[in-house]
Length: 487
Image (tube, rainbow, N blue to C red):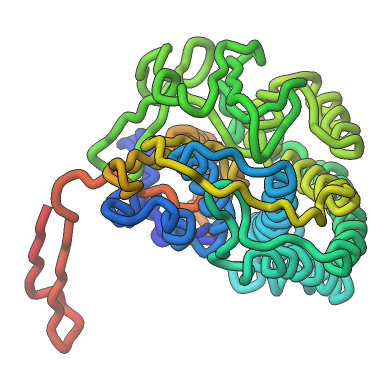
């Protein structure tokens, strides 16, 4: 049996590799998407005061620290039995809208777009963000950088710094907005709305009008039928900050929904010996393995998952784009995983519109930004939509508010099984007996996981015994003389 290894895989947060096994006929027999790193934050926070946790867990990641900060903050509100003031909730939403803009822009332009703008089979030295700028021009490249910078500056304005903020406190936030800051954000938000619309137009011109890319998006190599999950508001519209978690089946029919504190009744986690990353599934359907189609318990929770699980977007321009999206594919749900890039840009527009709406809200500059906790309830669950999927933080404390147990189901964790299945499916459709396996083809297999914008720094929390370790000892001729293994 022949083995093909893609190691390291590229343009993602964290580390991972793909192992592909061919049978004697040269067909793909199996493929494994493996994550060799580990984060131990569920243990790190034990023994710490709950009010410190939002600042500690933001260190899980340098890409989505705001998601962990906000989610932990919602959980800690409940640990102390305190509800934030209306202004505090609006400030959190404003801060989080800016984070969404920064994160979705980073993935689309730096990680995903080189595959479509430069080309999936282009030489690796040019298939990157520099190659992208050469294609789209310096002026557009400058606008991308400006859009990201402004989103980061809004986070820094409220959070003290753009990365690893110190903003959320039990019952509220640490800082309000002045009228001058509000006006500044309103001006920047108008730019972000226009830039999100430009990004959708760019996707239409470069991707949807390109016959080759269109065939790629609609091909069976990148089609995966699963259930879908996302937070919705009272009108079943996509909501990034709060609401009920709704999940639908492969036909788009609602098969369940839950409130934050009910998550353990609906989501369970499976483990495999070949990955440090867990495999969540819909508990009521039971673990059925890595299977797609009607009856599967696997679900997706990235932008495609959210747009499939909801009935509408929350803002008018994003809703127009959502309707175009489903008209293009012939209805809901859409199972084409590369369509996730399009769904991500629709979410980018919703985040920009929400940012502008909140910046114009008369209550946003109110000084009433915090309710002081008066006791310790001892347990709290917070759930938000991280850019990469539904994010759950669950903490239990003693009577002093010291954390005694923590559980995190991170955005990327939800998508682990779909990512593995998507990689295997792409490999089986793209690698054919007798056809030369070139670098460009391997990159097209990577495109299957890249659609999910995975963040493995955040996602790895399972510890299956000792860390496997291989030490290779070479002599001065570069020859392997000894190998020591710990498994």
